[in-house]
Amino acid sequence: MQMQMPGFAVPEALVTEILSKLPVKSLIRFNCVCKYWCSSFQTPRFISKHYHNNLKRNNLNPVLKRFDGNANLAYFSQLSVEKDENFLVKQNISLPFFMHDSPFVWGARHGLFCLHSSCMNGEEVAIWNPSTREFKILPPSSVQRPTYPGLTCDLVMFDCGAFEFDFKTDDYKFIRFVTLCFVDSECGIESPDDVSQVELYSLKCDSWKEIPSPNYRPFDSDLSNNCLDGICSWKIIIGNSPYEKVMILSFDMANEKFSVSPILEFVGFFLKTNIEVLVFNGSVGVLVYPVEGIDKSFDLWVINGGVWTKQFSIESIPGVVNPLGFWKNDELFLLNTNYEVVLFDPSTHELKVLGINTYLDHHREYVSLFFYVESLVPINGIQEHKDHIIRQLVGNASNKY
Image (cartoon, rainbow, N blue to C red):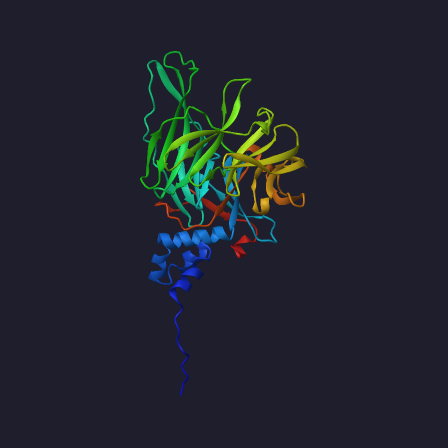
């Protein structure tokens, strides 16, 4: 007589808990296991649980934005976070959608990147989920450009932007600042007065609208993480020389209003000092470092309840040009004078040279670093196509990823 094994059922809650801790790649593979799993992975509750599990475990994925000057092509390098691999490049991702262009990257929020053409008059914008490989091309803006008698709009520049989640309306929004340059319609002489507009895109409505301009031209942050809890912040300069003041311009995605707040007076004279607005450990702050020299010192300040507090100072890191972003445990990625990406540990003062050389990128200003957490957030787009995104595994990465 054949002995039968006792049957048992795994509680549904336990299955969900286990699945919500798996990588997106595995979940996509499991879509074909059963219809129930497939539909469960698409529910807002599971998507949120999966994202917050990744967030809780600090599962950050670094992506290096680069520009190959020889091929005149922008591309991303996805870096490995395995302990023994020292941030080696595991995958290069080219962007045919932005051919001969090094797109601005605004995001990533909930694992989504917002990509925007950096070309003059270039309006190409896309939202991309690198985990699910979903890609959405945004519609052209419907915002009307102003007209003036005797003048022709000669140039449209997109100076700055931000991509953030609006918790109030459960919507992803993208804000961009537009500068319009005019010339005399007859003689072609450039008008001395530029015109500013602000446009806001809603993913839920898939449409654009105009927001009243604050009449300030913000500076885009090189550190990319300038949004917190639905509020985006930038550095602005108010006043005329020699009485300029550096301030913070903020935009609340929920009420769609701007506000201006001061930066502490003692950060240094802005013409000799770089001031980068960023979010650090859940607070808005500024990273301050000198413009000149290759031995850089860094001061990090954050504001809470209207009070500025210095978090730490880093004295004289030799041979570095500019910061790229903070990693776990307050470690700081930097670009050095040899075009190498290095990692500075403030607790040990160790400066580690990583296996990433960007000398072929030619222009340091094209090199930037972004971090995202894997997510299943849908964007109502299409799957990656070779006309938009092309991935190429590097070395033996095909054996592991």
